[in-house]
Image 1 (tube, one colour):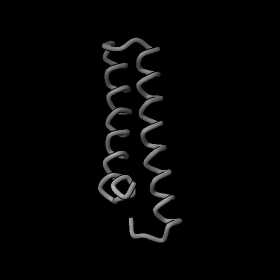
Image 2 (tube, helix red, strand yellow):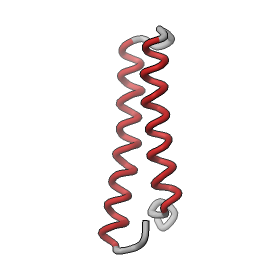
Image 3 (cartoon, one colour):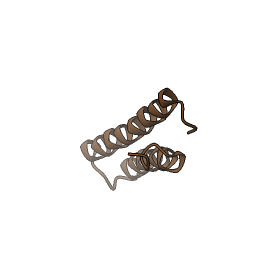
Length: 66
């Protein structure tokens, strides 16, 4: 659990989520993904970014440095 609440893990989740969202937009616009596939990939990206935000909040509530 400590690993998930570490600053590198929180930042890594945010970056992975952002990269997934960019990929969904770029690949969807280029026609490499169908609209449904791009939407699913974008949804997954927001889940990952949401997990990052949740972990960031949990770190703050614990009073530990992020």
